[in-house]
Length: 186
Image (tube, rainbow, N blue to C red; front, side, top):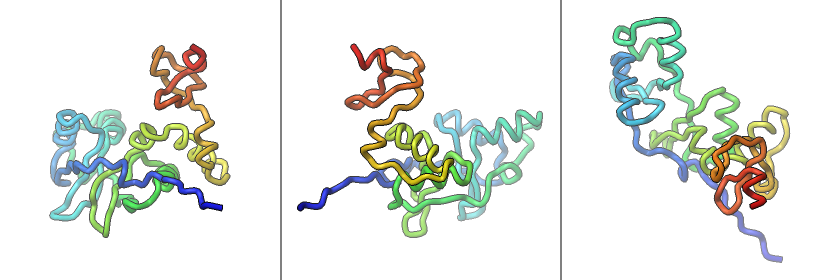
């Protein structure tokens, strides 16, 4: 009997390797300008030559805007998330999703041989395997085991149908396209 070969996505397959960083001494407005210019939602922060933290668009909203602070006067060091939470580039995306869930974060710094090589975000995982991420998140929350690849493929998730653009509680990946029940029946 021949052993079945399986392919499992690794973190390195999904990372954003264009590392954007600022000094911890920059202001929050500097980070917001850079995020807007590059259309990104987070920036790594350095102190000297070392990466020491991260700031996200949600941090800016929650820690600056909602608190009515002046983003020109607040330094990134005062609102950054630190220490950085990382994952190895050769780890599975399932491990990345579980690590994000257990740390209640949406991004992980990716390391290879101790060096930061990129970032993987929850949206990177969802873009490739939305139903798998949903199942991992729910099973982790319930303390259950990981789904098999076949089980993940049979599952549906909530989301926007790529054909009709309507929200559905039951979209499924059919030949690489996310379709609601109505559009799957066409």
